[in-house]
Structure formats: structure tokens, C-alpha cells
Length: 98
Image 1 (spheres, rainbow, N blue to C red):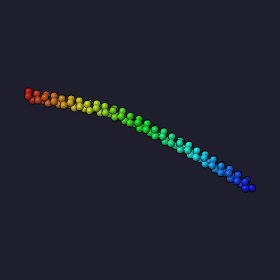
Image 2 (cartoon, one colour):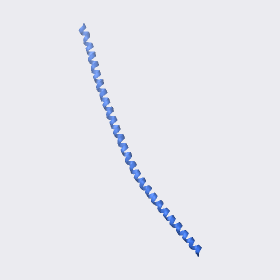
Image 3 (tube, rainbow, N blue to C red):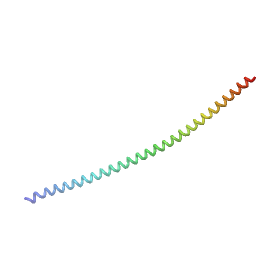
Image 4 (cartoon, rainbow, N blue to C red):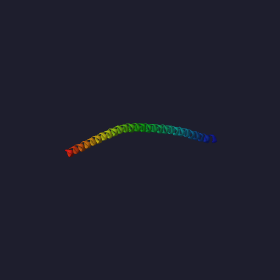
């Protein structure tokens, strides 16, 4: 009778060991998936950052060129205004002389 009782216990132990192995495999698989997902996420974030930086550089180039154009146009407008003011002063001075 003892032999009959021992066998079911062995089967239970074997089943428990199998279950532990299966659980360990599942756990390892899930950890591997999580690691792969995390790496993919990091790579995607890095790619986004690179794209953002590239866009910022492009925008900064555009804004720099736009700002330069604005500055130049302001300088031209200021120079023209000065010339007009000088011409007006000269005309007024001539009128006073005459």
C-alpha cells in the first residue's frame, strides 16, 4: 500500500516541477518581451528627438534668415528715412536762403 501512495506523490511533485519550469519559461519570455519593448520604445524616442532637433535646426535657419532679411530691410528703411530727412532739411535751408 505504501507504494501506491508514493506514486501519486511523485506525480504531484513531477507536475509541480513541470509547472515551475513552465512558469519560469513564461516569466523569461515575458521579461524578454518587456526588454525588447523597452528597447524599441527608447529607439523610437531617440528617433523622435533627432527629428525634433532637425526640425528645430531648420526652423532656426529659417528664422535666422527671416530675421536677417527683416534687419536688412529695417536698415534700408532707416537709411532711406535719413536720406529723405537730410534732403528735406537741405530744401528748407535753401528756401530760407532765398
